[in-house]
Length: 298
Image (cartoon, rainbow, N blue to C red):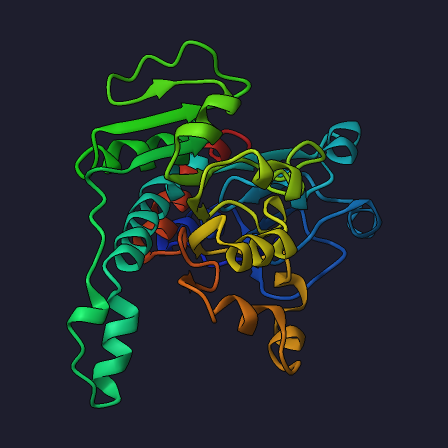
C-alpha cells in the first residue's frame, strides 16, 4: 500500500479520497512516503526531501511555498500544490476583526471589566470610516481583505509590484511611495522570499506617515525590532499581528523574561498565534482546493 504523511489537518473528504486511492495515512515521518500534506509547521528542504526517494507530490495547505524547496522538487519530478484561495476569506475576516478590535479598544476594555473596572472615557474608540487603508500585496488574500474593508471605509489603496492594472472598483492602485504617504493603516499580504524578508524595516518605516501596522502574511516580512522602535517613537500608533518572526522558537521566547512579545504588548498591539487562516471552514476549503488539483495524479 502507498503511504502519505498527513502533517496538517485535512477534511474527512480528503482523507477518504486518499484511502480510496489506496494510500495508508501516516502521522509520522516515513522514508517510503509517496505524498506529503503539510502546512507551515513542516519545513521541507533539500536535506529532508532526500530522505524520501519515492516522494511524488507535496500538497501545501495555505499559500506560502517558502517552506518547500521547490527547485529540488522540480528537478526530481515532485509535483507541488498549494491552496491560496482556501484561506483568503478566513484571513480577511480575521484582519477586519483585529483592526476593529484595536480601534475600538475591545480587548483592553474587556480585560478591565474582568478586573472590576468600568472605564468609558479612557476607552473611547476610533472609527475606521475616515481612515485610508493601504494594502501591500493584492493576491487572493489581499484582494479578499480589500473587498471586506469596503464596507467600513471608502478609501482603500493597494500596491502590488507584480500586478499592474488592478481593475477592482473599490480600490485605487498606487505606487509604494504614495501608499506610504497616504495610508493610515498598512496591511501586508505578500509571500516570504528574498525580496520580502524584512520588507518592513527601519528604512521603510522612516518614509511612512504615522500608521497602524497589520501583518497576517509571514512573520519575517516585518522586523520585530522595527515594530518595537516604531511603537516607542510613535511612528506606529498600533499593530495587529497574527504572525511574528520569532515563531520558530516562540515557546522559548515567551519564557524569556522581558522578551520582545512582552515589550510589544506594552503598546496598542493585538497579537494572535498565526490563526488567521486556520478556521474550520478554511481547512475544508483548502482540502477541497488541493483535492481538485490532486485527483488526476492520484
